[in-house]
Picture 1: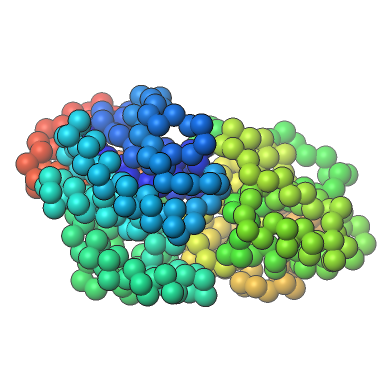
Picture 2: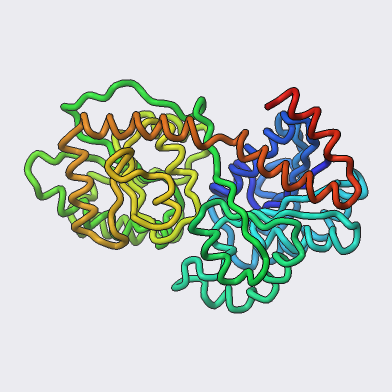
Length: 399
């Protein structure tokens, strides 16, 4: 089965959705499918390359940063992906496509269906769902909601990556059903580090985009309150880039914890496992999430997680088992949770081990890929592709 994956981000560009596309593409290939990725050009990256057997085609969109994409850049990808997808279809004759984000990935998949009868599945990731980050995206969602509903309506399946995101999507979807396929994590790549020295300052880690959504403006005051308590020695590493770096750096200085916070900037995928391995606690005070890959990676690395009690985080972090959940934007609660794990390193280690066991059992990219292949195969079969015969062969050799 020949599958076109459409995503405006793909490693080394972008965040969690790009990584999901890369892992799924490789699992599709291992399962006997033939995936091709259509994504955004950036810098000196080749316009066409082979990524471990997966053809990756990059189109120029004017993207200027690896870590984030502006609305005009997304719009450019949305427009240019349509002729690019049609050209790739002439070359590969796709049986189905998988669009990451209803917008900007969906329109190219929709046009392929209308003009080439190629069915498509939409993978919802968060920001493409109306109601997600209402304070920041409400205007954009008001403009795009009709297009989003239309793309969802004509998809073979619409998939959210968490129960919370699915519930939010159903408010817009009408009669269109929303399925759920959780993200996975590579537990070999992200693994526990060496035992830590309890006499050294606790090393806290945040990884992700440095934007308001992630709640670092709440974390810094929480840490400032903690810094005033005797014997609470810590250091926070912020791995990521974004629009709020300068403001947060200044806030850390005003709060008197500038020396205790390192803004590491954007880190590529090869650097992340080492950052997780040297940390003691992962902190993720986000305001809104789909299913955060960073939390999965931290848990795979046997880190206890302190996160906000919101959809997405709730599905991963088991309170008092793999970490601690705190109310969103609650500075005292976040201070107390971090204080508890900094003081009790044995408890932190126990939570971390339980988190790794959980992701090993329940969250794998292979399981996610099988679920997507089932949906894509059913859609392709309705369009005439002999999926059942292919699937039986796949099942014997891979399941």
